Image (cartoon, rainbow, N blue to C red; front, side):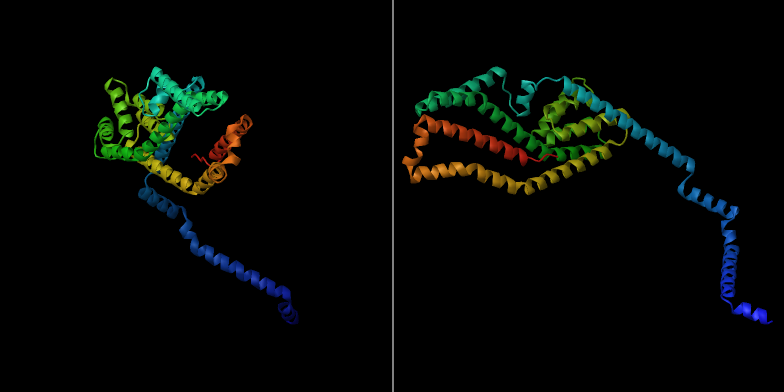
Length: 339
């Protein structure tokens, strides 16, 4: 009896009693919860989930269909990208008609050359009337012939692209609403060509002209990125081409495209707002030398006329203008963000 009392009073007895209590609690808990995990219960729960969510075979088949469709679309995208890369690699230079057409002009090559010659002749005549050195007159002649007409066409081309991007999402929305209402895609494009503002309406009209000549829509729409080489027109051509080859809901695809176009437009606006400070700084820095030269001409004309009345001064002015132009081009490149 004394040995039992001493055993119960020892620390080992406390550990043993605690372990027995834990084993008992685990055993009672397992006994109470065991019926819930029996095969019959699990089988019934599985049947209920299958009836609620559909059979696993149908879900598996749907998953296989989605995977196969994604693989088909991915293969078509890879093929289109490879074809575009090969076409771009084999192309030498932009065709003159495409370059002029992208600016919204209808000039022919002879007309462009005549305009270039007239610009060069006018600039050369003004430099001779101002009694400038002959080397400066020939430099201005070169700028007038090869610089001014190309600058004008490039600026018109950029403005036309900007107007196109402003109106293009609205035209895509018109096509989406027409498709959802049950109209054929060709009729939707016809409505977009009639309702959208130029140059978007004009581009869709050209697509319709190709379709009327018997060209399939998937091929006719491929000509739009050629006339308007922007990412947005390339997106539209890819969406319609993939839909024609792989099927699917065209209204959903074009709806997502319209949303993407508007997001890109919003992002460009934010970038333009953020970069406006840098553009203002570049404009101030670029115009500062000319403002200082004008002020010096008004305040002390005898001091500044040495630059324009001597060959050394004109040479220095030419070097300064060259470096100024180079600096302006570098600053423009630094603040020209593209997405």
